Length: 357
Image (spheres, rainbow, N blue to C red):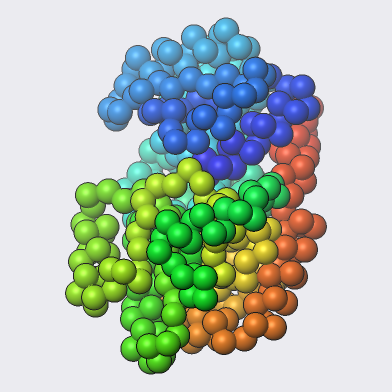
């Protein structure tokens, strides 16, 4: 979601629009990517409590200063704050963008989110399945605009491959699988660990391969359980959690294939980034993934480590398949999921909403 906001803000700024990005809590790890454009302002409200009236007043001041034409919300946490602040200021249309399929914890907030959804003018969604999920969740019966996520070309130099593989202690002839995502239950990383264990057990010792997972680890029970399972299987040197990385484009260069083991997704940016980087893709058949890859990836059922292991082994052993999927996947993303196409979609929706005011 944050990457979409970054790409969208940059795309709007290139079209000579003034953009304000507001973060309810801290500015976040991607904030530095917006620093080089003077047409983009970024404000962090540093609000960490549930009912922060000071954050509402701060937002009201920002809206009064900037006088935005339209407000685009990208998460439910911000919805009450924007709704109330906008009501106190000069009211402008509010667009809500639905990103994921909603996971643990959202059902208990359904009533309050349904209440504040009456302040939303229009909803967009990153895929049809995401649209259906959020319409059901909110009781929304108006049309929803589908705007697929967009990703830029990977401009990282080829020299990054050798540098990253040396850092990971991955030999030149070893096969490196990459996964990217902050570890949460819906990401299904426990399935990826079990799939790797299957491979490790079934293949000969000469079949060198490794899994690297990029994503911010924390002290949650889920993260601790992942690390504990890797240790139990004695895979620490072969299955590595890298933590947060600000050089994900270099990781794509270093990898030989990408694996998405998620049990729930909307339209994950990581698969688009991997494909446009030329990586063959293995992914679970969830959310908007099947439509996005359109046959240019190996799809397996979610929560099925044995299927995942089989697909991983197939990619490792079939050079022609890897080359074919890498080439066709890159072509697919360039044609369907470019950043300019995404920005065009939001611009059209903004104009349509404003024309009805």
